[in-house]
Image (cartoon, rainbow, N blue to C red; front, side, top):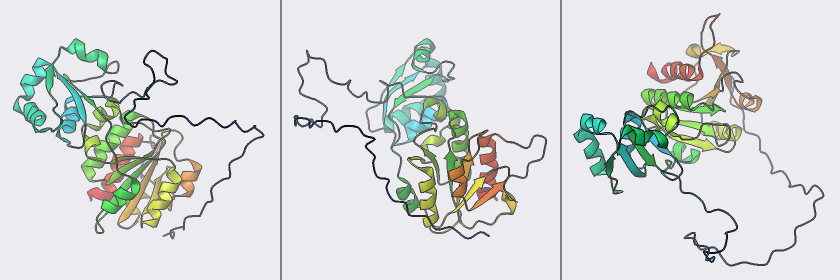
Length: 301
């Protein structure tokens, strides 16, 4: 097996001025109030628009029964509004009431007609009579995730290289929860952010599997190597088949976007490029299907 490569030390690039003149010194202004009140006269136009808190105000709604019920059961999830149709309230009965009562944020349930839910959600959203306004989940850092992992047994972290479709990411999260993947790693840019569509496709798994975002995927893969992880990229031109590989107990599985696959820098950070034993002419799988098969090979046997 190919030995692990040591990470290269990279220095910081010096900033370039490109011939621009330095801006004149600005006079010192008053310190900002951490509460967000700038002290401006309310009659004067502010210099910039205020930040909008995410949640009901910005349209971060979870919908669908599995996604909403799992969010209500998650004490780390901050919720602000819960809407349900009378039919769903009657169908779920005590289960919904108990989940609301156990929460410490004072959340209450309000009955709403179906035509009240639709304008709050994306067009065509299948809400199943439930909608929950939430704050984004606070996710651990990569270092914190690795510190929390046990030292024995197979540990798998999945890294996504610019997989932007929320349906695919949600399905991968669902498979990750089913097979016990330790966490899902993606980039802050060119990736699927937390959303109602992603949570609906994950069917509650977003509340159970850490979904981390990093600034630089290549550097994150090097950090995983330093913690003893073999980094394996899944690619159709891989030299070996995943089922016959023997990567050890700590594995990072890297999946690329459909069509483009893994980027060059991502490939260079992989210790191995592996493939699934598919057969032509239909030898290409959807990325979420490939993830489920790979998780089974690594954790389900």
